[in-house]
Image 1 (cartoon, rainbow, N blue to C red):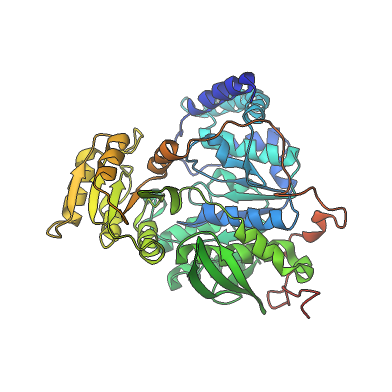
Image 2 (cartoon, helix red, strand yellow):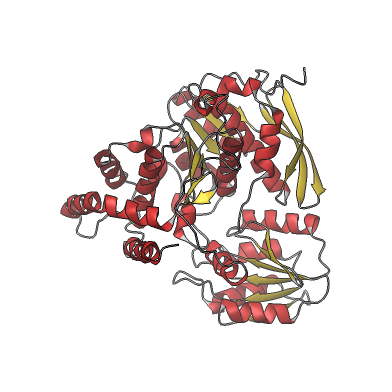
Length: 491
């Protein structure tokens, strides 16, 4: 990689970080104005828009992988990142190149300056935020490439999220639980914010939800005259068993069953995410799905990679990273660890952010941890070491499990590794920032060697068909009872 590109990227990254999160307001004025100045690029391609409490990033990556397997160029936008902000903007599974990233920031700068001035006229502290800039970059880059499909992960909530300017041909709502207190204190309250991504006439694909959440979704679907596909109804996880390197699945969409899917991810929660992603992909591709070879699905889901989600990054001892940062996610991680790894003992390294339910997260991990090391997350927003230690002491009181504290992540990893033996595991958990920093220690990012755009995962696109034919009108007229998986060779 040209040093000039890396220098330009470092400058662009620093300029963005200097913007910070900005004021937390239910307001789309700045991003709407910025998108308008750019010509509303987010409206030029079909989009799958994904919200929920946990699993959003996994579903986005799965939908992207399914699109790539079908020959569709899919741009994916996720947040937050683990090691580099470039991870957030990806094409066919490949992060945006440093030079392209820097060029986008340069192109947007005059528009950012204008919107900053306009925003400051109403409130002196207002300017376009870090997340709004990245979102606008995704809007513009995907239109520039151009992509066949944009797959967007909501940053927080839905209704007032900067991503909510997309077309939203398919709206995906993963399992909804309590996480960010700004959104509400019950799943029902939070659902009112999440359903804000549902656009008129969309296909709405949802995970299994509590009845009170389903009621909120039903009202939003009716108001938008949308179509509703639910896991457990039109979509179903039929079979799941642990396999080498992941799990073997059978999924149903409509009347068709797809079996022998090897998903290279651990945990029942990832199997449920795969069912949700497959439903979203079916909704997106519509009637074209009927003629699609079943191997497209097997290849797509078999190629999924989700860094930082029960990811093994080292052996001897086995080090697993999981970005669970709320009790719901921690419970899923604990269940999957117990099922997939079978460690003799598990040493836990935990560091959370201060706005999280630290005790709740640790309590869900209590059944699987044999030794606990707490530390501070590498962020000014970290929970204090004193708070981490007090919470861990409370959770593991009278269990005989040792609880230790370390000043930073490096010290915590060293301490944890010193007490592991043959057959033991080490789990790093509590925050994506913590997991990203740990990943830097074990799997540092490689240098990029070019800025080439890769449209498909393996070969050049076939001339036999236009991938855009798969999209039709983005699946909004699909009957979920239609024979979606008709394989011409398997009749």
